[in-house]
Length: 220
Image (cartoon, rainbow, N blue to C red; front, side, top):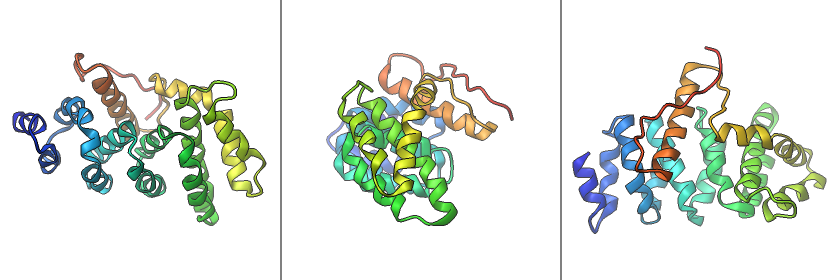
């Protein structure tokens, strides 16, 4: 941990990346604030961690990329939205939403490229990314984010229009989850959502201990 902090404070912060896989979750959370400070300089390295075997590292990389808002991350995050096997996909959707209306095209292309049952499941994920986009933009009437999604309501592809409609209908639920009022089906999913909440807290209020409690409502 100390070595990682020294590297991040030096001239070659990317050298810290091989060390991240060796950290436990608490250590990784503690390292997120300095990682976020130099996140724009670590985009290629963070992109490579989107497919890391360790779930916490994939999740941390996703969150950091969403906060960095570097255009290079849009296509890899869009692909990850469909490929992620855990509920880390929710963090991918939130990361994409941070990029604003520019992600609408890639998300629509992802959805149009799916077929059968996969398309239905992907539609739920794309709708979540659409909702995150609206919320990230402030959800103001006439705002660019809301207008971008409302414009999709009348497109010819029913999978896209349905995703847009669902996004607008679930804005309150998505906002509630961001405040820690998440509903997760099982213990593993709740732990993943707890990690996300602690990660954002560590980055936005780094003076606080990342071990703060985060209650996720749900049944085992």
